[in-house]
Amino acid sequence: MTTQFQGVTVWPLIRKAVRSSQRPAHVAVAYLGQGASRLLPHPPGSRLVVDASESAVKSGQTCPSELARLQKRGVRVFSATNLHAKVFVVDSKVFVGSANVSRRSSNALVEAVVVTSDRAVVAGAKRFVADLCMIELGPERLSRLGK
Image 1 (tube, helix red, strand yellow):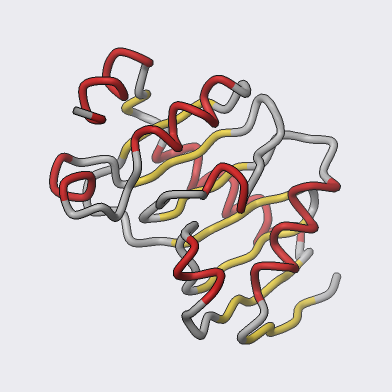
Image 2 (tube, one colour; image 1 turned 180 degrees about the horizontal axis):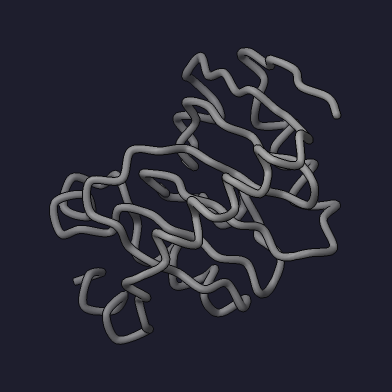
């Protein structure tokens, strides 16, 4: 088991883990902005939970067209209103920190994550994401949110 703290340059670390993953990721992240499907290219079969409430979409914090792109690639997309967590389970690691999936997070903000391969923590994080997978967003709902 390893646990480490990573500050500032979290996105290269998260992106590398996701790109090299052969298994679906399990992600709960409050907001997913413009360009997010390139920033975090989830493997097919992944589960992604975001706050896709009308207020999050209207404010530009969550981008329905990016969610639709990921969905077309085989990612299951869910919404949890008032979600504020940032949890990324990738293979046998979990990243927990401050980073939303957005260009601003990647290019401008100072972010931090704790990365661990502790099996109990990884399992707990995976359960956390699974428990949030209650409201699945289909293509029609994403299209409606995009308008």
